[in-house]
Image 1 (cartoon, rainbow, N blue to C red):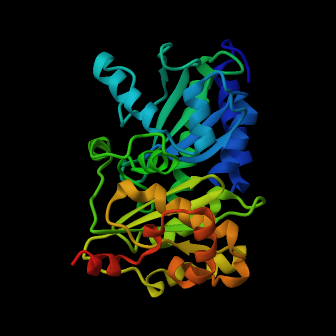
Image 2: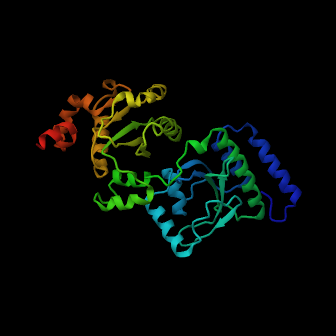
Image 3: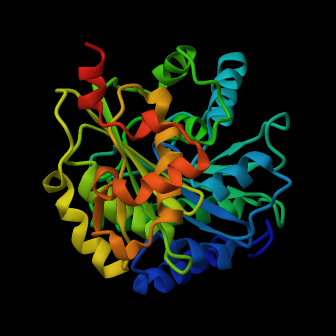
Length: 347
């Protein structure tokens, strides 16, 4: 990109050239790839729940927060809390949710490089996403601000075309907490619920895990978007993550009913097209047990051939094949018992 002495005419020509190059772009990812080629610095688009929509550039590990966001696909619990604390202390770290012109974020205590930041809005001027450029390859210039503004307009049109505002999270999601519970990196105790409160967590009477083991050559984000697009509109309490090469979704039911195959049958076509399988855990009554049921399902994936699976398979359906493995490994048999029989045993 040209230096700070570039004339207004030149930057206008550059922006027009960018818009022209984006004419054939069919996705936010293609737009960011083009933006990176023009600006030379890494750039990223995430939704209002800090989930990555698209990314282009080199993931610089020297900037830990940026690296984590790109690697995991969303901001983890530690960095979310750090941002809230920094905002309370300085009032400057978290950008205003309505800045529709580029601003520079600069906080040396939490980030290696500065960022150019701008909100992406829909036709109703509602913020639906955020675009950021990292100052990791070359210093920012005034031209960058002009380019970022143009990029934001193109992204707004692209996201609007796909009705993104109607299909995205409007609040910070619970995904980071869910991931750390499954990974076992936070304590499984009552205090966990307090950690979830800022994430608008909704308690349920019963929970299920849906786990789809992804193929190595699959586009993880595309698989997630396709499944989320079907399931999160069907279930009020629904959250998903990508974890250890698998799509993991948590479904919460409030009315003490049990999840049935017909409730999620709409994903069957997606699974068939991708030649993947969905395994549904036994139900459990506290989010603190999510790691137990995740480990059980993944062990089943490893032990039982998918030839014995239907596209959507409940753990109970392949329980006989799994029992031998559990007994050999002396695992917790309680996790295999259907909640109905646990209820009877209590009396």
